[in-house]
Image (cartoon, rainbow, N blue to C red; front, side):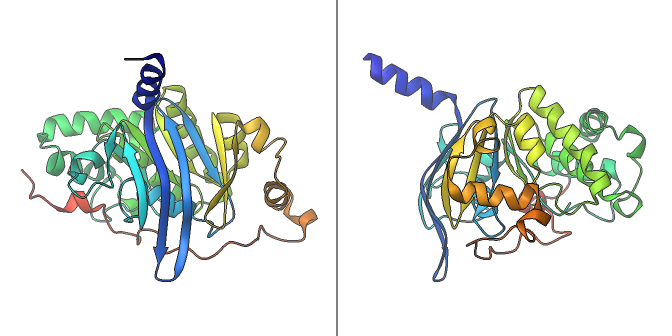
Length: 290
């Protein structure tokens, strides 16, 4: 194998997520218009941009919650856009945390963490509970294992959702604006958990409006607008000294909305709604409890 081939193989091997030429349309509305992005193993990439710019749709195409119109998506070398792919097998390697918490209201925190382990991974009750308690400790909720979602704050529910995803042993995590539904005073606890995951080396693709998190934690920041990647680079460039006028306009509205004349706006178009609240991920509902 030549040097260029060796280098190419090494780059491909290091990629946790590879997206090439991704397009997604809903009827006549084209939400993604040719997206190319790579997330390497152990990397934290934050995707920012105005509402409706295609950020959440990009994330949902990675694990095929939305089927792309064209283009390819690879996760750890497996093409998830291949019609023959075993998507359930690929999804077991991906943890996803939604804007809404999607916890089962009739189950305790511990029950929410064990049900997918038992139904999807086939773990016994004792092993599933051991893993669940370990991950509740990771998110600082050891004392809440017996609590039901209605008894928990929004921040606590979102941390339970993160612990649930971690309990499946994912190789990478997708976060779709995980703090957008929280009161401002609860945001910090969730971001602290995510910072901890980044410090542990977890591969993360994060859609967020939390600019401080993107600046401090991300290895790279991607700015999207109108279904396109407008700017991409290290956070000190994209957030600190953006090169594109559209990026500067967006950040001026986000970082100082009063001075900019109101909340962030732009050419963005509406995206389809996120996963409905209270609906569990599809793979959790497939098999009877063992």
